[in-house]
Length: 176
Image (tube, rainbow, N blue to C red):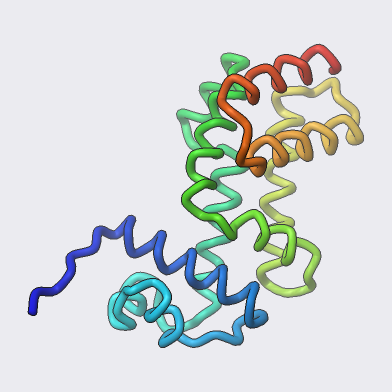
């Protein structure tokens, strides 16, 4: 019998997807590593290796993925924003989100919870607001919330095409 080789990215994606889905279905942290292993087809040993033995660590990684992607903190995303090409970053986030089908639901389910996960998600929201305030300093807080919500909708809606996101961003620029 040969062992299946998994790249770190494959393990990460399979485990996060399984954990997020099970957390939504069964309740917060009411799943086991055995269930994650079965659902993701990744051994518990490998899950422990990448995420440790605390279940909350897997959900923290999901929050980090969401926050880093949506706030677009990487150099490539920041440069696109500096060039006024917000749609480029949003389209890259949309591609990533397609690989994590439960991530947006996870965000909406937990963002208002008074727990460690809710706090992490709210911190990432604040980072997203700060980024928008940095690039659009003349906008009011209300306009920044609208922009944030608009961008979240663009990355969440699966039926849009890249050109639709570009057109939506151009429309938003004209509004503000």
